[in-house]
Length: 255
Image (cartoon, rainbow, N blue to C red):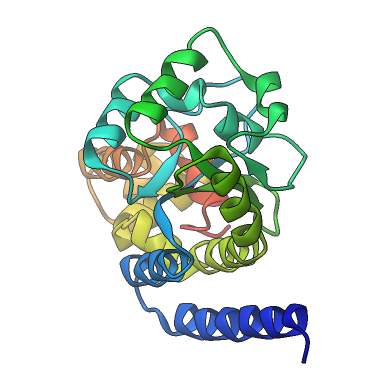
C-alpha cells in the first residue's frame, strides 16, 4: 500500500467515525465537542462556526449565530468591534465561491474594508496567523455559513504545509457538522421557543392580528403580544415580521 492510499484510508476512517458521533449527538454542545475534538486531532488550535440568513447588502454582525473555541478575549473583541463585517474570510463565505480559503490567500484582499487591517492585526496579536475558512451551505440555500480553523506554526512555510495537509479533512468535517446542526432538532436548541410562542408565530405568518390569534388560542391580546415579543427576542429579530421570517428560515416553525 503506498503512502497516499494509506492517508486516504486513514482520512476516510476518521470521517466515518466523526460522522457516526455526529449522528448520535443529541445536543448542539455535544456535536460541537465532537467537531472540536476532530479538528484538535489535526493539530487545530481553535475554531469558529457561524451561520446567518441569506441577505443582501446587510451587516451580518446582528444576524450571525456562532460557536467558537477561540480565546474569550478575542471573541469579545471580535463582537465589540463588529469585526465580522470587516473579516475578509467571513465576507468570502458570503460569496458563491464555496472553495476553502487559507488565511494567507491573496483572494481575501478582494473582501477587505478600511477596518480589515485592524482585524488582521488583532489576529496576529492572538497568534492566529495560519488557518483556513470553509464556506458551508444548507440544502435550501436560504442560509449561509462558514467555519474558520486556526493552526499554530513556527514559520510561513510550515503554516502553509499544515493548512494544505489539513484542508481535505477540515472541508469534509465542516460540511458534516453544518448538515447535522442545521437539522430541526438542533435548530430548536439554538432557538428554544415555547409551544405557545411557535403557535403565535405561525398565526402571525398566516396574517392574523394579535386579537384574532387571542381568539383562536383562548388567550388575552396582551398574552399573545408577550409571546410574539419573547419569540422575537429569542430569534434576535427586529419585529414580528422579522421573527416569522427567521423562524421559517431556521425551520423552528413550519407553515
